Amino acid sequence: LGGGGGGKDDVAQGGGTDTTKVEAALTAVVDAITRR
View 1 (cartoon, rainbow, N blue to C red):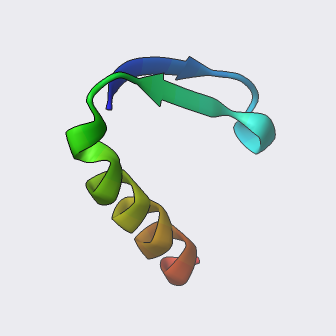
View 2: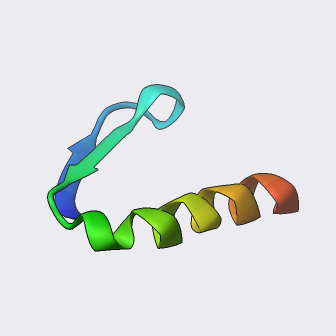
C-alpha cells in the first residue's frame, strides 16, 4: 500500500495511501491464512 507498519508479530499493523493495492493485499492475506 506504499506505507509502513509496525508492532509485534501478533498485533502488527500496516498502512499506506495507495488504495489501488488494497485488493492485492487482501488476496495475499487470504492466501497466507489458507496455507497455514
